[in-house]
Image (cartoon, rainbow, N blue to C red; front, side):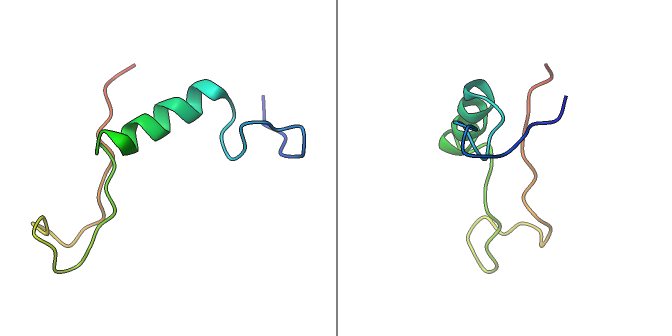
Length: 55
């Protein structure tokens, strides 16, 4: 079922409160990172991949 974006979409850009909390929690716990060229953690030049546990 597609998510319809509009004024009634209380959790936009997320589809629900659950998805919002999962995604923001992953950022807060540093499971997601923005790649920075020349930084200390610059082990490779590829984009940072999210680490997710299996559902």
